[in-house]
Length: 475
Image (tube, rainbow, N blue to C red; front, side, top):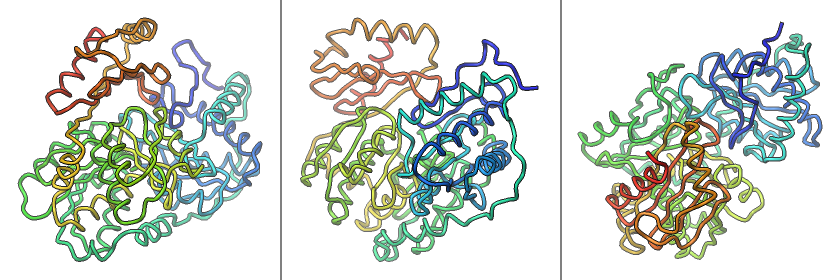
């Protein structure tokens, strides 16, 4: 008998990057089976063919869930292309496009805490599905949830061959790097895999170009050491200490649980903001002739990227939060590179979804090519365009906090952090444009948190601006 939906179980919703929930509460096997049947129906409704890439990460029960997905897809007349082992989401997205699949399914909750699980659905273009597709899958899933006797399983009609999807991805990525610059350098990379699936891919790629890579937290752990596998400064303190205590040219890298997000630390142990890292990547690709079209960024990304892109004659477009919007700009040809405030970066020649492995390799290439820490290159950009600091905070999205945000949306202040509000955007949260940066408040689409984003002229001013955001929320 299936588990009845009680009032404590929230409605099934696809957020900015698929469906996620607490394992055993919102994310259960009966609900997963229903969603998988819904996804299979959605694929059959399309014109993309029958092939579907199936992948999973190192979270608890990911592999059995992938086997269920394989069985349901086969029962629905589809052809699952199943990965050989746990796989980074960007590698799965790469396989979707290169194997001309109709879709990709990845059992992962990405950077969420260990108690979460999730399902990412990748479109045939190699990026997260768009809003109309997500709403259609939700509708089909709700039909299955309302069925008192749904088909919850599928007969095992054989087992699909397991495929090596990493080798084609690594081969193409290596072909797009400046391998000679990397090989000549004495760069030493300290990489924190955060117990995620990047451990089996990123170090091997960098070692193949001759770099010395020190792997940290590379062993699989469904509990991720007891912390969210999210490459934030609070989770990378050990890596920062190791970098500060070393000698020579050093770089710290980290990726989240499914290796689509990245973090970067310089030789002094300080972490680069996502905007700073993105500005370095855009500048480097443009200088080396590998970026000629536009750049797509989210509305919560800092303005340094825009200034760098403008110097290279590149058009910049801003989009709502959620990498699916940036992927759309890459697919349409509007942009050739894309990045966001939460550690997502993509470069169209390799793929249209965020890729922490790609970003890490390119940051290593920057350090190798210049022979200097990333901070030196960033300082050169700041001398030309001014010093700007970006950051974000997260608070549990309590009912009181959500109510406060709703009130601010209805009656926003005309001054924030002591400065007049120049522009106001309520389309994706609440964004206050100021004369020296911005402040933005928004409920997350992937976690039960409310985020505060800000840009200000310097680190002290940034801390003050983030505190002003907390004050607006009554914290």
